[in-house]
Each structure stands twice: as C-alpha cells, then as structure tokens.
Image (tube, rainbow over all chains, first blue to last red; front, side):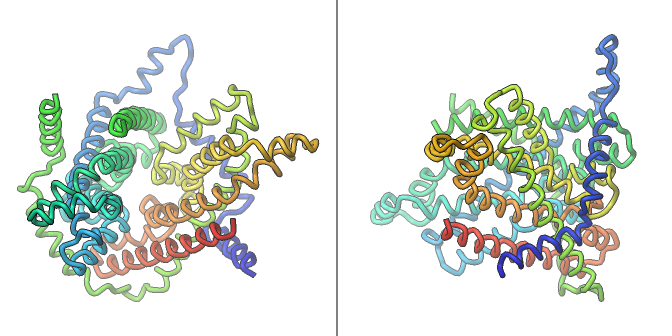
Length: 257
Length: 251
C-alpha cells in the first residue's frame, strides 16, 4: 500500500512537471547542444587571440566578480555576528528566559526557511538596486542558518565551567562570554567559513534579481543570448568558487588542528 | 602576529562594508521603507487566486520530487562507475569525478537559467536544473559509500563464484542502499526549497507568482505566497524526517 502511494506520487510529480521520456530524449541533446554553442571556437593556430576574444570583457567582469565575493563576505560576517549573538538567547540550557528562548528560536527558523532570493527580491524594492540589498538578504539567511548551528553547539557545552563561574558570582553576560563562548568558537568559525563558501554561490545567483555583481551580468548575457559571454562568465565564476573553496578548506583545517 | 591578523581582518571588513554600501545612511531609509511594506503585507490574502497558488505549489513539489527521483536513479550507475572498487582504472574515473565537481559548483538557479534557454520555459527546465546539481552530489556520495563499503560481503560473493555484476548487486548494494536512501531524502528537502524560487527565472513552480506579485506591488498576495511556501517546506521537512527515522528503524 505504502509502495503504491509512493509510486503514485512519483507518477504525479512527473506529470505536473512535464517530464516524459520523449522530452528527456529531446532535452538532453538540446542542453548539451546549448552548452556546446556557448563555447568559443578555438583553433590551435590562433589559440592566444581566440582565448583573448572569449575573455574580452575581463576588465569589466573581474570587478563584478570581486563585488560578488565582497557581498558574500559582508553577508556572512553580518549573519555570523547576528546568529551568534541570538543563539545565546535561544539555547535551551542558557537562555535568560524560556519564553525569550522559544521566540528567538522561531525567529531563527523563519530567517533560514525563507530563501535568500525572496529576501533579495523584497530588499531590492526597499533598499534599491545595488549590493546592499544582496548583503542584507545573504546576512539574514545566514543569521538563521548559523544561529541554529551555534545553538546546537551551545546546547552541548560542558556545563561545569559555567556552574563554577555562576557560583563565584559572575552574571549571565560574563558566564556566556567567558564560560560558553570559548567552548563553541572554534566549531562556530568552521561553520562560518563553510557558510561563506555557500554564500559565494548564492551571492552570484541573487545577482539575477538586480543586486549587482557578476550574477547580474550573467543574467543579462543569458537573456540576450550572448553565447560566448555566458560561458566566459561561468568559467570565471567556477574558478573563483574553486579557489575560495580551497582557501576556506585550508583555513578550516588550521582551525581543526 | 595575532594582533596583526585582527587588524587585517578589521581593515578588510571595513573595506568590504564600504564597497557594498553597508552604512547607516543607506540602511535607515531602507528600513523605513521595509517597515511600510511590512505593514502592507498583513493580512495575507490570495486575491481570489488561492487555487492557482495551490496548484503551482503542487507543481513546485512535483518538480522537486521528479528531480530527486531522476537524480537518484541516474546517480546509481554514475556513482558505481566513479568508485575505485568497481572501475579500478583511474583514467575513466578522473574525468567523471571532475565533471561531477563542475556541475555541483554551479547553483541550481543558474542551471535553471541555462535550461530555460535550452528547453524552453516551464517546469521541465526546473527539473533538469535540480537534477544536474543533485546528480553529481548523490553520485559522489554513492561512490564514496561504495569505496568505504566493507570488503567482507564482496569477498563472499567472489568466493561463491559471483561475477562483477553480482558483486555489485549482492556484495555492495545492500551495504550502501540505506545511507543512499537517507541522502536522497535530504535532497528532496533541499530541492523543495530550491524549487520554490526556480520560477523567478521562468523554470516553473510558485516562484513565478511571487515575482509577478512583487512587480505589481500586491503585498498581501506576496505574504500569502510566502506563507504557502513556508508551510510546504515545513511539511516536506517533517515528512522526510519521519521517512528517515522509518529507514533507520528498518535497517
């Protein structure tokens, strides 16, 4: 019975999303053909000038790529600070008041359940076009995600140092700062670096809705069918993502060591 | 040294904030506008479009499920081929793994943008986009699971005279299947989240309505749509968590 339900759900999903063997059969070659079409014609004899023609816009694209990275950086930093601070209020074992804890947990949940792109769409209207809307969107979502991770770390801290501090007369703020925070910081920083990697990717795609950076340029190139620009920008983007991932991984290993 | 590092961090952060326009003079007016918008968001109201919204929500769920199923099905052969135990020749394995790395480092929304150009507007482009991202990750997870599977059952099948296919079928698959199913369920959750926004680039689902409503400033409809998105994401998360616990109990 359960198996039948699952099969029915899968069948229905294929129906509503218009997936069919025929479309797949036609769709896969269409996609490879499309990707192939975006690649430049490169001949060995004219390799240098062909590649130069392909990357003709690099003087414009690199600053845009840098803006995308800065948006991810600023957004992650904002989100990490906000998430970390809120998680102390939200942790079940540390919260100053259970009701405040529950409210903060709901707030964090809301912040991470709404997709970044939806925030970006709203913030573009409120804050105008430009990177600020993107940073705030990334930051809000990151605050929810990092706040939850920090909350889970906090709920598993070793309680004895905290009890000792409380016994010697430390107030809540001091207990958190000197008792709980040092225990979770290495783990939290590692999560934050990981979030930065994710945010670089997100930062590029929220550019589609007008928050600037390389994503916006890519969106325009795609919509105007400027084939070779599409592949050139994607290559730059993928390279930047790969380099930042490597850097962040090195940093995370250092943290773990 | 440590102080120098802090100084560099502070200086770079200040530069980044300056470069992205993050300063109170820009934030305050925006917050005021955001407050005015928020006041208009309530009460949520579908504006007579409730059934349309629910139908596109179903389409969103359909996109996510179809993409997960197709990615899982295709990840099987790819994952097996990517594993050292099945395909010992690295010359085959290396390009396969790098290709998967590449398709994973491109975001689903970007794939959707490309697929809309390649196969046209509509949910099918969304399914293909989500599939591209999940396929590589699931295949990689699957190869790693196969790589780390215990050699005992494999040797057992070999000792009983099994051929290569039988080694995979009876020696490796039973070991990795539960973990693989649990991973696929995680991807279903993440796909539902992604599918809600694919419509922004025209790849089907409820995101299309959201962008339309934002464009014409129908704030009550916007909040209704966001509420529906949140409700469906939460419901699928619950369902998937329950299915995972069932899987764990079964294994």
